[in-house]
Length: 570
Image (tube, rainbow, N blue to C red; front, side):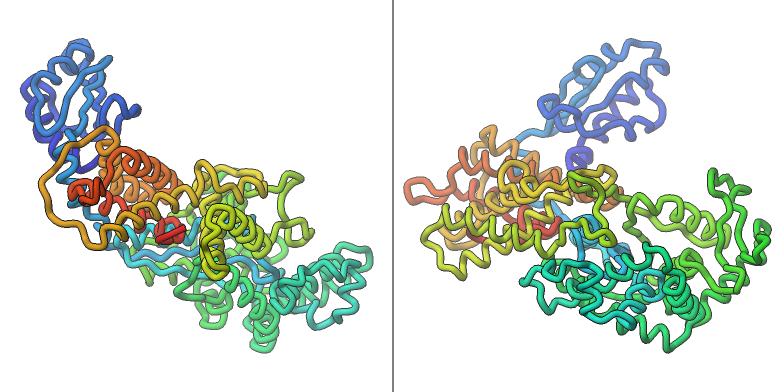
């Protein structure tokens, strides 16, 4: 709780100086208390024992008697604990500022190969990335959400070959499941076109596919040399698919500011210039087949130490183009963040080390673990996926059933609006609240759960605050403080942590920290709602109303930050 730290540190510094502690190293260990019942901030005194030649328990006890301020102090087992007083909290929480940032940040996320619809596994990148974009904006940073379009890789080449060489009848015969498309998505190009990709993958896996591989290889080779006609053919193949993918993402509230094509850096000469620079490095080498590489083992890389950046025929590799892309991105921002699956860790390490070798900066990377189905990993190629479009429809239908049961007074249009918002929010939050480095198994019942630690729980808390505001019918007014009962004190403590949780989530690229905090804030508000009535016998308790309104503001901003749609009634 940083707002408390500002008044604790001066008094604590004076007390520590008086007992002979030298330096301010203690500021790094003054931190949020592990247990709420201990206080808001805690200082372990063990580090002072050697310097002072005293028992840490005695040190904490002496300090507790000499430190004072708008907080309560206690000593427990060598720890000095600080707890903000209710009146001080109430005054300072009302003045919380939530937008201290001023950085120019570029966040590249999603960048999925445009060869088929989004499935739940792919969507984790998009949802985490978009949440990080939202939280950075909430923090006050100037953020640009970037999509890197793979317009020249092998997967796009497979799709382009399939669309050029296979008819719909042939695709249906190869897949032997012509009724597999959900009629709901008839005409949605990503759902339709993925069948050509899957049919081509089927053919490539069979014996005698050498000619197909040769044709696809020619297309990819031409694209990597910047062949305009092939790049145009690739764009014709992937663009309708990409448009369908973006339509799905838009339903999830995910939008992009810019799209940058991979081919840009081949066509504009950036890749050629880069390969010349790489060739001049002292760790450069040439393989027997004429391919060029960097020996990153000389720089400490373990395992696969040869980083190939140029084929024997002179064409570049994906990683080469990625390095050129990173060098360009750094001209666009102060801070650079990439969202990548855990299977990209080695390549990200190689790219980072190469950037350092070139004297360039290295981006921050949020790696995320994969989502699995109960029967195994999702794969567009194999077709064993849960498409995000289908999940959103299921979520909406489930939400509609719940809303109809609870609110029989609502019209069909009102139910449609609420169920769409609840369904989308539930799906997003189910993914955001899990730490990115933790994988989990996707289960329908978890994704569509509206109880416990879920988006609807947070949404309902917000609608309660909105209901109070509608009944009062005006803004809150300046007033003297009233009595602070335990439920209000806990809400004030939770609201006071808002800037801290937001800062941590943004600075450490961990959106789940703020998502879990929103559950804490919603829980605290519900207790406040139960115990601290705003309207009593027709009269407005101005102090309670002011606290409720501040909570409503923070709930709404925080919900938008994690991608929960802040409805005013449910």
